[in-house]
Amino acid sequence: MEWTLNLALLLIGVVFAIEALGLGLGTIHRPGPGFLPFYVAIAFGLVTCFPLLRNILAVKGKKGGDGEKLSVGSILNLTTVVVALFGYVLILARAGYLISTFLLLIFLFRAGGFRKWSLILTIAFVTVSASYLVFSTWLNIRFPKGFLGI
Image (cartoon, rainbow, N blue to C red; front, side, top):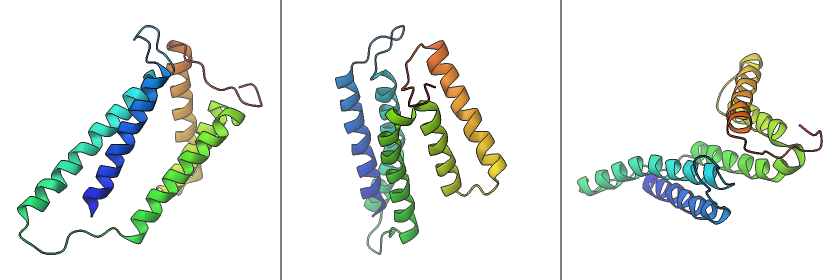
């Protein structure tokens, strides 16, 4: 059963890569709007290939018996992350990159098991700041500014 989840994740990566191609990749010196999403989708797809291959090979090696079952908790966690990402996409243009990404990271860290708010806020702030510095300042990629203009 786990292989179906890995296959679905691989297909999501492929779809995102195809959609990013439609946005235009640009070049390494002048990246287009699809540059980062394309390579992230490719990396995502490659990462999901390893457990998929492991699961396929493990199934071929088994002569019978029960496969692994998805637990309610794992399905709930996956659903939570997918809903959070859809929410992120919906508020990104209105709230801007900095605010929406900061809120997404806080939610994901909290859902992922972090309990100390000081740690969650610090890691989210450092991650958003570093990503903004790298992509906006160094690579001159424009992010949505949102209603506060930041």
